[in-house]
Amino acid sequence: MKKFKLLILSILSCIVIQVNAQDYTLVFSEEFDSTTLDPLKWNIQSGYAANQEKQYYSTGYQNIRIENGILIITGKKEQAEVSDRFYTSGRINTKGKGYIKYGKVEARISLPSGAGTWPAFWMMPETNVYGGWPKSGEIDIMEHIGSNPTMISHAVHTSNKNGSIGNNWYNRQTLTTAENNFHTYSIIWGADDIKFYIDDTKSATLYRNFSEDYKGWPFDQKFYVILNLALGGTMGGTINDNIFNQPVELKVDYLKIYQLNTALNETKDQTFQVQSTHITNEINIHTDKTTNIELYNTYGHLLCKKSINGTGTISTANLPEGLYILKANDQILKIIK
Image (cartoon, rainbow, N blue to C red; front, side, top):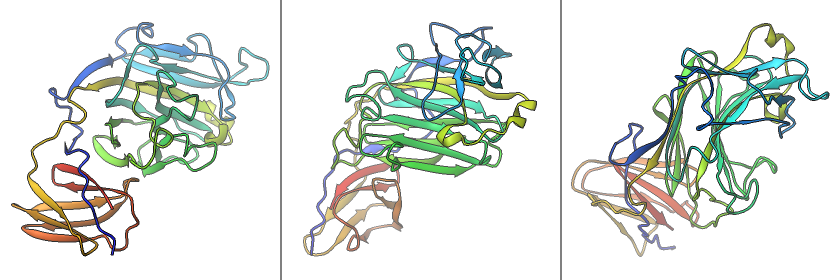
């Protein structure tokens, strides 16, 4: 039988959504308290968009405004600044002005409604360390499409898995009040995983696969934030022009970016023991108190869950060789079969 070997790559305190001041530093905060967009914090992007989107991102402020502490990005059905586009919208980013390598990013956002809308809150690399898209990665904290009103999507794109070849990692959540209501969307991003949250509740986790190089995990560099409202395109789909009888608006209450302070490979005290076995496909676990044990694969799928007090085992007989994540109460172990 194959031996289940233990490899402790790191033992981290379980990261929760509440920001601990000693672990994070607020490096970018936007409350939209002024009357216009702050050029020291934001870049306005203009021009055509990728993904077969129908809008033209305007060069001025007619699609981007601030009212009563709220950023409003408006999609419109109108002649654009170029002759071949009949929709306009807005897109802004923090490139060179607000970025992190590991930490927390959150925004409180109200999404528009209507078939053809495609708002997004996402991140791209400050410098394409590994080459242009998708080689240096993309993190989609939140995407929504108006043709599926209750769906919220989280996603990432890498060289190995990306939208252009249709195999990128994504996770979709149901949020019945997604449209025209404010919700908080966030990630907590570390060296080995990216956790996604909706209203401070964890909705998905993507784990690093240590058998892959940068082509599978390019998320070890600085990323900045993008907010935009696309119309149509590969994800937005067919636009229903009747939606423009009402304002089509992406609203943002605030954006905050926190940098992780703690050493990335800091080892915490171990409160439980895990021992590999040389004769069976099992993980042997000994604890000195009741411990909730969860075993995940690198895609964040829960494989096993049990509560152990004293000595217990988890069978690995049906698992292929590779990296797995063992979570025990407030600690995380990376183990390799």
